[in-house]
Image 1 (spheres, rainbow, N blue to C red):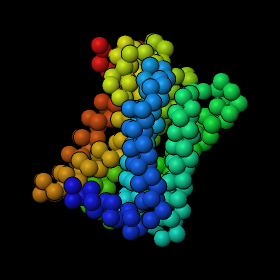
Image 2 (image 1 turned 90 degrees about the horizontal axis):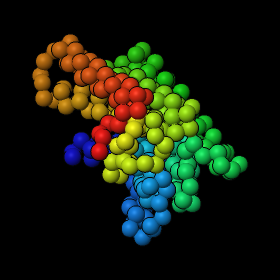
Image 3 (image 1 turned 30 degrees about the vertical axis):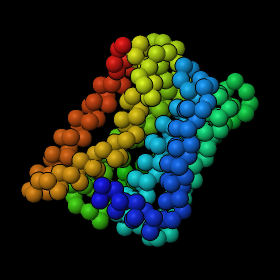
Length: 266
């Protein structure tokens, strides 16, 4: 809890604009929770406010994560501000589209049913593409620069960036097929809240774990550095093993989904 407080305080001090955008995501998520109770409209078998809620939380966490991690890079203040503004505002635009479409009770993704819907879907794709390019920049700079942290944590951050790009690629696979399910149509029986299919393959599972690698792997490296006082070499090896296991897990559930097999069959 103290570390989370430190993250928020650092982001608020370093980038007030990004910090306010993160808060906007979380506050709007509360609005969506209220929508679950007062709005009984459904879309593809779930309440219309479920999807905006999931994305608000996920994107809010990502923007907060980037806002903190960039403080570890030896960038100029101007470069940090440019990257933070690009990421926070492109993600805000994407989230705005998802929220708007959810409020209308229509799909935000894979929706080409009208000119407006098609343009909004394409707009989200552009916002994501911009952020993937920034992820690639971070991969390159994490390799060539010395971050303001330990070697094992820097290595964990690098693995996180590499895997999140793979997670984004899985998102591209869903766009190519204009659906997230394999073997069954979108919108069938699914797990509570996340609505991952329980009757067919669902690419969203691997996509989700891929996108959150940038939190999970660096946090593991941080936890390890605090709990195990050993050499950098041993810590880097351990973080690598964890990263390989995590990436293999994502690869397994991606392969499983492509075969039309659900994560959990009910």
